[in-house]
Length: 172
Image 1: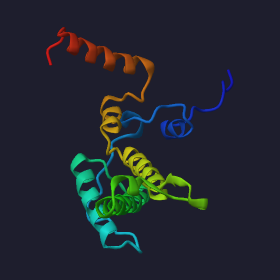
Image 2: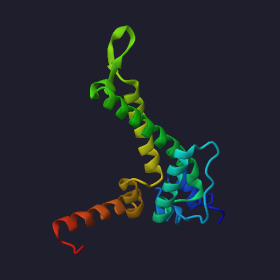
Image 3: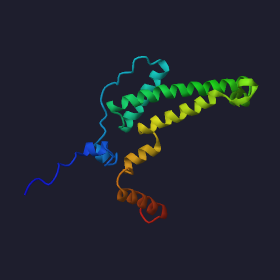
Image 4: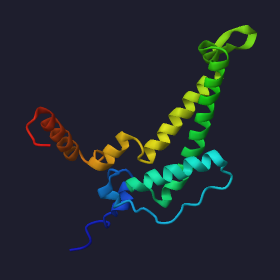
């Protein structure tokens, strides 16, 4: 009998192509890299502080690896920018009023939402998105720990166990 078809794809290829879910079991353990991560060139002092604090927090959870540094860099710059817009909005509110911080005069003296409010909202959403990619949100950690991104049966068993715990059928 001859060959019956091409060899199967490896686990890594199936994860990359979306045929397998992104779980710890499919990717293998996340290995914390020892030693300091190099702070990206061009970072200011505020960004360096966020970088260092985030690395320490992620190491404590075992979430950091070298492949995360690009997303971590984006997170740090976005987070610092978001905090600066928050500070500016608070300054305007303190000097004038809450409405002055939220509203401003646009073209032809029309009252419009302050562009800082839009920028602040966009930066906050981006920072939270980067944090989720890095596993720094409760939902991201839950998905990683429970394997919720896995197959349907695994999902069902996780939620079945949670429901049983809630109903008092299983000892916690």
